[in-house]
Amino acid sequence: MDLISRFAAQRAAFEVAYESDDWAPLGEFLDEQISYEVVNMPFHCIVSGREAVLNGFQRSVARFDRLCRRTVGIDSSIRQEGDKILVNAGIRFERSGAPTIEVRLWEVASYREGRMTRLIDIYDRDDREKFEAWMTAWGEGLDPRYAES
Image (cartoon, rainbow, N blue to C red; front, side):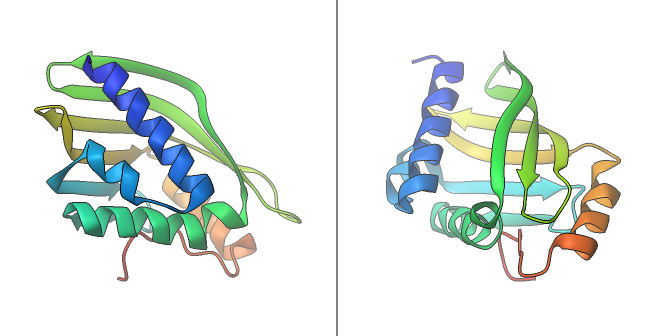
């Protein structure tokens, strides 16, 4: 399986986990020592290790994504460069009584022997301030963090 297909399969598994809250099957796509990093957001972080990353996904989804209506893959593009997959896309969140918030990011996934070893989400420059303002005004009860600070 080529890396773009592998990445697509991992994304499909993520969406199944998102709906079912069973994150274990997603682990087959991740190296035991995977590192996940979020850059240019107030919830920036580095999470290391398969179990910690899976727990972080579950935490953020339960405390943020599921409390909003989420649309992923807006105007997305994907390409492979060596052992990396690069995706540029938008994500939209809607919440009752709040304006829609849309942010864009680069997602860079590195692979070794078919497993993701590193995942970096790099949000667009202006989106941090926009997200902070949205959270201050309409984010009561929401927590997008992948790990405790």
